[in-house]
Length: 385
Image (cartoon, rainbow, N blue to C red):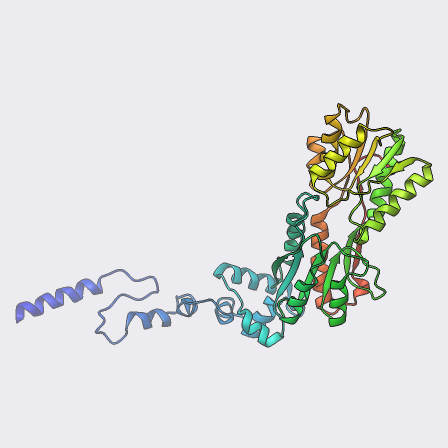
């Protein structure tokens, strides 16, 4: 018995001599009065209630870390203007560090909002990087907000009003963004009738104002055509958008204004438009350039149509910059790298996406639609006349 007591005393001495733990208390036998876990929680040197952060981070977790009230944390995460910028930044940093994600179901019950913005995105092959650039800009606008993006594919042959109706009917989003507008677009009519926040990439002819971001296609077509005439081209042509789209009229008006001012010869393809496949554009240009009195100046509203035109002309042995010229709209900066003889006019789609995102946030917040419009001007890649 005495031998057993000696062994136990030796063990207790070794335990007592062990180094102090991370939280300022020596480890003890579980049979002692205070369990190590309770000592960790009560230690003055411990980090604030770390045990409460073992599961999914909550507002309370951020409150404990920052020392702010839960209501202050909530308002800071919502970017309430009453909370100082420094506090909002600190709360967002902590939230990002611990991986905090708001409970969207609870938020929706509390605020009536989904914190979702839906984008009806067109698979537009003519405009290189259209979807990527627009989404990049939208992401910039929304990066410091609680909003998320949901993309719904749209298709070129229709306005996809059913998708807009589904989003409204089921409360899938707080706002909607879409492009390729028509003069009396059924999506715009539906959204206006339901008072649903939206921003279009393109204009309409409705008398009721709505938020939009658009590119000045009149100015593009006018500048491109004038440039071709100034370079001495005797007959100019342009590939226009489909007639049902609003910017068809804008582009046609710009082209016709330029040719009438200069008294220049022109032609417009009848069975070809901006949505035509690249091989159809190439075949048309190749055939037409082999016929009598072909055009020698091409205004191309996209990089794909410009490249298809170059291929068609090259098939007949015609040299760019010698027997013909092209002025093209550029959205990716790619065309000027691979075909430097093509003069370009730039459309900044990333800036358009960012502007649409910011305007939609303001529309959701209740600002009047007539104050939320932007018309982007063309960026000329050649000296203005």
